Image 1 (cartoon, rainbow, N blue to C red):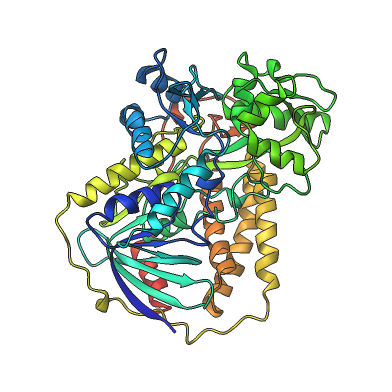
Image 2: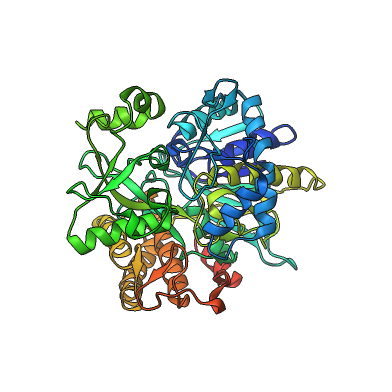
Amino acid sequence: MNNRKKTDILIIGAGLSGLVTGLILSKKYKVTLITKQNLDKCSTAWAQGGIAAALSSSDNFEKHIEDTIKNGHGLVDEDVSRLIIQEAPNCIRWLEENGIVFSRHGDEIDLGLEGGHSERRIAHIRDETGKIIHKKLSHIVKLNNNIEIIENSMAIDLIIDINQKVKTCLGAYVFDCNNKSVTTISAKNIIISTGGASKVYQYTSNPNTSTGDGIAMAWRAGCTIANMEFVQFHPTCIYHPLAKSFLISEALRGEGGKLLSPSSARFMKKYDERQELASRDIVARAIDYEMKKYGYTNVLLDISHKSASFIKRRFPLIYKKCNELGIDITKEAIPVVPASHYTCGGVQAKLNGQTEINNLYVIGEAAHTGFHGANRLASNSLLECLVMSKMCSESICNISDKKSDNNSLRLWNDSYVTDSKENIMISHNWDELRKIMWNYVGIVRSDKRLTSAKIRLKIIEDEVNDYYHHHKIDKDLLELRNIIEISSLIIDSALSRKESRGLHYSIDYPLTKTEYKKNTLIHGKRGDYFMKLVHSKV
């Protein structure tokens, strides 16, 4: 059965940015929070590193800004970075006021060091920062009477009114993954906080939920998408058949971890004078090159020269996980490989999340604000989530109340479609697409590989579109539809950048070119097409 629902604020996604925004806005509005799985399943909970903030006496905002700009390879918006970085200490205080206890050294927060940073400035909770922050805030959200949590549900598409002078978002169609029903939800403001799209690749450090749903929805609704070619591959994901997607935090290298070949030879000095503490793009590309040149299945990351007591205290989660796999990191090196990790591009949005569509905000990893440029600086992601949440909430609270009328929104109608007897098409295309992206659109690219990927992807897209319009939807189909569009955006963006910059490296264009010191923009689908697509199912 399909039905209607009305709310003041609809937040799609329950990572850090969704939780914080919901908590702030719930002081004034009724909030509905949609999460694709259970509330505790998201990328935030997997974040081991921490939050970058200039808190020490030797550090300052200018140093943090300089590191961010340097790592962004010419595409960081300096004004945006300044606003975010200056808010960092306030964000740390806000978390502490809400019960978050950071690791400490005496009376001060114990600040870690990560690649690309010139100072120790990573506020952390051992190697479980995201998990503990998300758990604490989730608990607070669950106790909040002004927040309704809808789990195991995902938005299908945004509902857009294109009859006004400026397109306006009225709500969304939301699919209940358990009972297979669709709810038409209308809201005064809609906030997308669905995270990134790293699941488009065969190997990723992200949870299964990272399928770029919010970016794809916003693009179909007409939003401009920026810089999707800049996909960050984390250099060190554990290589083990029983350890799917487990990340080895950059903080381990910050505390002295060394990268080694399988024969135990260090190799990073060949690529950057900072060696293991070079930025992620450089380290990931170096590992990829070593593996391909010498035929390695993986490289090694060794922290065993540090004391066992330090390792167990500083990295309890990593120690425990590796120990379960038969690897004692106090005595031996960890086998690692790069894996897709973070989407630096996303929906073009202001720092308060406002998009070019009225009432529609996009925050966190799904947004592109200009903060990360061509390569995100380690531990700047949770910081951006916190600042965008604060500014988005303030912006909405400062707008005069608007009316919302869900009676004008038609219900979802799937009466003309049938159950599929060919589900193999979904699972096969899921696997094939992710392999195509890994092999052809990965760490090192070429025009030939990208063009081959584009051709193969078009075949999959045609199959899935036909399937979508003739069969009843399910979670796998909706996610596949989204990752196809995300993959196309990545490929088209990469093909248009005839240079190498940051996370985008092309063997055809190995040099960085001044004329490409600009963002790659792909305008959203035409509004009339989007409404036609929606109306075909309502």
